[in-house]
Length: 495
Image (tube, rainbow, N blue to C red; front, top):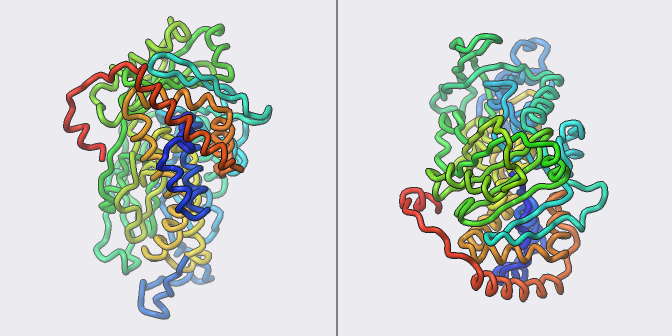
């Protein structure tokens, strides 16, 4: 969902200042950017050819005039932002055959739908895909103290609110226009040949092919040379490559149609609620869509109670959505950390399948698109115009190394911050009060909207540290006790 309330943390903990004094500038900037995502958001070495050193055995070059029908085939499994952005890059290399699997071309993934301003320019997304331009936000504490955020934004700055069915279709259609072959089908399994890390033996994708007007799929299969797993938290590609398990949150959202007068309040407004009543470890939200609002919440530690938390967020929103008609109910798993293994042989994971969702904010759209593009660009470069296949080591040294260097500290810091500020109602009260700071708001919005740290003031950082301590003391003094729940199995999973 949306990333908004977290940059507070960027100047809020003693731990942060200790890190600042001992870390190199590049790491610090990544950490600050991580925290910024938190507040406003509610991410090479080449192995010589086997012709030289006996590594992977390569087929004849696809560009050869005698092998026009022997192009390497890349399958991108999943047609969301990560898959569509990967397929777009592969499709522009004419010596690579690109196929794009998506089980439902009009799929509407459950999602808050917030995207940073920089994504619109970086990925050439037309503003017509943006339903609402959010310029104001309300952050509401467990005791219903409200903080208004947005005074620091410039007139041309906003957080884009999208419906995934609209944005995903645009990205997918663009990849298709470049030459990616769309396949409406559900991948059910992948046959991985033994020793695929050292040979060019193809993978066999088995899937159910769907035709328009028919509910049942038809069994089919396809041989491919390389696979990009962009098929979400329940990735079949991840299963095939034994990528390992990861913990996940459940995000639950209801799309609610409200009156025009009620909708006017949310014209440029989004709301975020914190408190153990709406989530013991996340937040609840009301985000504006085209002609309705998305109302939802999420949790890791107490997933069985998700409907209880959903009722609480509706109650907290109160008269602002009262009488609204629920037009769609959505639920979806959100990964909590990287997969243990993201590359295996010539299979690579991107987006949710790889675990690229930030803690605290649940932001994943930008990082999905970015990881898909980075993976595809690295692999296309390694393939040298379709002349060869990359090795696992090469993919790890390019795509994975570059992505982790760019965004790894972001995920780590946000994990720490979530544990600090979502641990109890006292910390949540302190967090909300800290967001009153215009300095926090300025750095947060700048860093979130553009995914780069803007100029910070060390003196203001130190000042904010003192304010943080004061807010924590006050927050703990006024906070209502957290509700207790007995769910040891779920609780133990949050590591």
